[in-house]
Image (cartoon, rainbow, N blue to C red; front, side):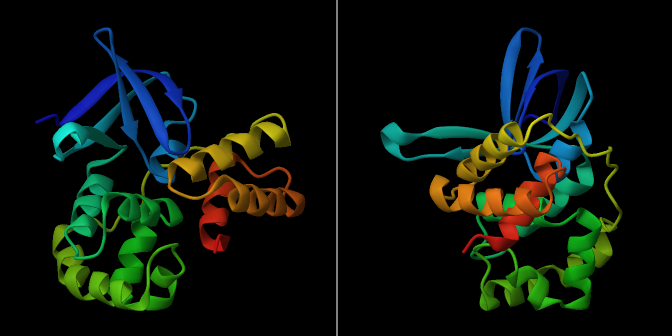
Length: 204
């Protein structure tokens, strides 16, 4: 089992980071929280969660990377809930910080959870019921370290990267592009991670 990967950050998008360690490039699926935290860093250390999907010729091995152990633990708690898959858990962690999510769960704020794409009322209630006690006992509820938002030079670059990230998260390019353009019209200076975070709340 891989506990963490430490090395040079050779590539980073709001949904994927590539770390080169000992001559091997590891592609890790990441959340917006982790993307924000690795901005401007040359060498990074990401804690790993491994997923092996067995399906005959379609076997796949996927790595998820997290900037902190707390975020990884919260991710593992989320995917332990019935109806919450790997991508949905990552989307939840992209829509809010670890501290925000812990607060939402501990206060039973179904409305905030329902605001995340793909989360219905029953799933939101299940997350709160299943994880409320675990969140309190785990000590996860602490804010992730963040860095200042990185503003990409042009709107077109921000738009392309944001749409690419949303596409990797499972959304169709056309509606994603429409929402991203709408956000950038109102907030032209938003960094790409903030554009994606807002888009996650707006895409229908």
